[in-house]
Amino acid sequence: MGEQLAALTGLFFAAFGAATILPFQSEFVLGALQAAGAAPVWMLFLVASIGNTLGAVVNYWLGLGIDRFEGRRWFPASPQQMARARDWYSRWGVWSLLLSWAPFADPLTVVAGIFRTPFWLFLTLVAIAKSGRYAAVIWLCKHISWCAGA
Image (tube, rainbow, N blue to C red; front, side, top):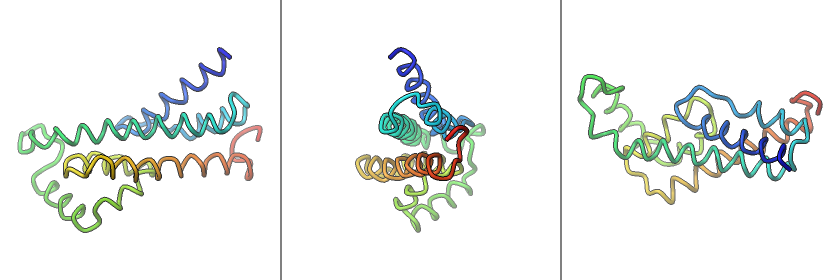
């Protein structure tokens, strides 16, 4: 039981970190734990999905408060970049959050906070996207021998 708890805790933090601005990949952790039989697959899926979704929520909350610093010299985006982001988000809107599963798309979750996407809608779309990615990883690991030992 202790090893299983340690594996699930590690997976949670890997998935959480991977959803933030940290350069981290949780798919390999999930695949390795699945291949090792560290916990039931449904637990691995649930823990990874919750951790990754909560990491995206941190990004959303950062976005809610970061725009007050816009225009300062150290702010990570220029006024022109912010204008492009506003235009892009107004065009593609909240549906772009369905791409939040992709490693390059973590900034979308910050942008959702900046542009005040309703939290319930944000959470729903991001949870669908993140859970879908982990379902695909689990399927690949099982059916295509993507992870070692599968």
